[in-house]
Amino acid sequence: MKILIIEDEKLAADRLMKMIREIEPTAEFLATIVSIQSAVEWFRHHPDPDLILMDIHLADGQSFDIFKSVKVNAPVIFVTAYDEHALEAFTVNSIDYLLKPVKKEDLQRAFDPQVFCQ
Amino acid sequence: MESMKKERVEYQFATLKSQVNPHFLFNSFNTLIAIIEEDKEKAVSYVEKLSDYFRNMVQHREKDLITLGEELEMVATYYFLQQKRFGDNLHLQVEIPENWKSEFGLPPLSLQLLIENAVKHNAVSHETPLTILISAYKDDSLRVVNNINPKRQPEKSTGIGLGNIKSRIQIISGRELKVDDAVDGHFIVELPLIHLKR
Image (cartoon, rainbow over the protein chains, first blue to last red):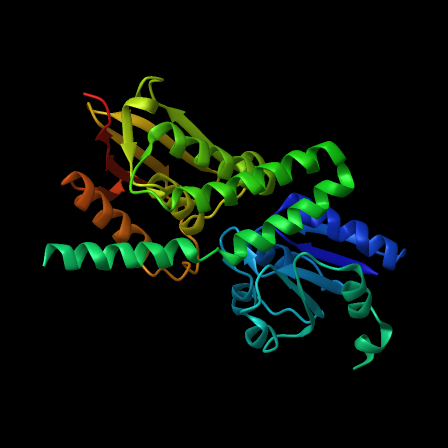
């Protein structure tokens, strides 16, 4: 499973990857992207991954801006520290919305194959 | 009139201080969990700093004035916590003579709020690092300078933070906090200090 991480804090990104490896041993991490600008660049030059984990507050603004600049078809799991963007998140192709600190069982639920089938 | 204004400013400040920034709190917990898994001793010192931060918040908010040294300690604690998140992309430099730390005072959290504002309103990343310099200015002021890294979508700003610091400084010192945001890509604040010993 090819996974793209969009998260501007290194510690947070490292921890996400560690938990995902435990849940999904076939996970392959394509890149860790820290800003809207570099995310837009990445999507322009790469095919869609199988899954994206995306922090909402990035260094240069909110990650929803990415979808305004480039077409993304992959499913997205949003991650945020504070619950105020849930509605906005569901206007794009999100399959789950996780709050920081991210709990492993919540992440596990997001990876449930049934979710992908929906 | 003057006393009504003072009351309003104090009320505003009380509200401001009672608001724990939820982003700061939950992001700190998230960072903490990552550190716990990585290094037990580092995690202990992180929690100690986090508790220092909240204790200082609670203790200092009762006062009208604290020493520059006390305020700088708060700022240092905040910087320690934020640096765990942002790494080398956030720099804070303090250039203040040692004797100023006990000779001058200021309304509590005024410098702290300026630093939090800088972190809140600017992009902090590897491509766009944020550098904040706090330095002694003229005989009795501080200058806080940071480079401006505009965000694509600016954070919602209430303007209460900066406005409230301005009013408290005005009331307590009779002097004015000056803000200049158009100097060569830098945001500059001039913060008047109060002489404690004469």
